[in-house]
Image 1 (tube, one colour):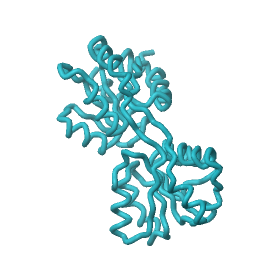
Image 2: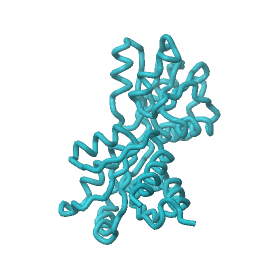
Image 3: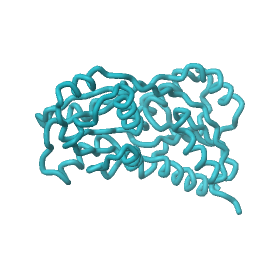
Length: 257
């Protein structure tokens, strides 16, 4: 039986730990995954968390826009011996089902998930389910997170605070590996799962590399960043997930024959 990605060479640029699931799905579909992790995710302690714990401030809502945010948030609470008491009356918003599942692994349920997995949809969809937002709100984010949620809450005159629990940096030690891969491999697709991965790719690749195959972006925000770098032949799935990217690639190559 010929599998959908039969022999197609797919470059996966995700952070190393997060790349495994994507790699597995590509292999299951008959493709050849090539992992070059361009990003490095590091949990970071933020004094804001300790201060919030000391003040015994209770948040009505916590907004998580990534699985990294969930993982690092609870890891820092554990390592810093910060009690979960300030979450006692909280509700939780997760950007997508994978972020919600990560939340569940720590014993909490997502009360709100937007229809499309993006910060923009979190703002648009929220009032469809809730007529107003209870205060105060805590936004859990990384150092490269966009200001969509803070600006929205500020515009609604909602009391909120932000806490940075992880840093996303370019994995510069992968530069030689990336360029060797680009020069050696006849890639059939390049995949990006965040604007940061696009930035890292463009900053690390050799300038003479211009023979781009189709570029599959996980969502419109990532696509927009790729467009800013003047990349073309950009594909975006209907569902902004790895599953959506897989479906898109399978359909694309099926149509290509």
